[in-house]
Image (cartoon, rainbow, N blue to C red):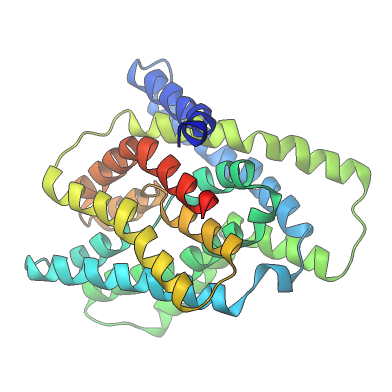
Length: 308
């Protein structure tokens, strides 16, 4: 446990450095927004393209893995929705809480950290988790919140949703990489050097941006935020672990899936909540609390899955 904690410490130290820079206003919110945009559209996309270009679709897609992650995550989503509705929250707010309790920071934290800690073979499972979160569950929350606000679900919503997915650089970079690998295209040396150098900026840039984005957040709506953090850090990896066992997922891939499920709440959930004006305070607090506690919970989960 201590060895794993020490390995994860530099990653969380980078988050802490970003938080301190943002808190001291040395790195203002405007700078954080531009750094996040650079990482999202350029550095992380280059990293995902490079990873995907070395995989085949068969290596990425595994039916048992997909069913296990989908079912375990859907269970946590359903629990989050049921708890929210039991508190008499409206549908949009309940859906946002359910989404918060199962959406991890796989892109900015999981991809760079888990590949380093669990080895290059973790690339396929981590990208599969990221793809499911982006395509399935992000689509679900968008449809539910938009439908709840307008009172109906229209064809225009599905068109807008499809366009949104096509404009997502993480999805498109993975698709481009898989297409490159699928057509067995040669990777010229200068291109490989380019995506390697650019992708190398993703890890420090993403972690620093996570910390800086947390600096202006406050722990408002603390009680629901604690529940959502518990759902994300404890219930989600537990449910995914049980599902991986039931679907007989290969042990290494199951370990990567569980570790990915243990990640704290993703920052893009706040962007959604703020955009739609649905529960932004509790989502913001859940991101702050889950990230703080993940310094202890993520190493514990990784130590567990690597020991088993």
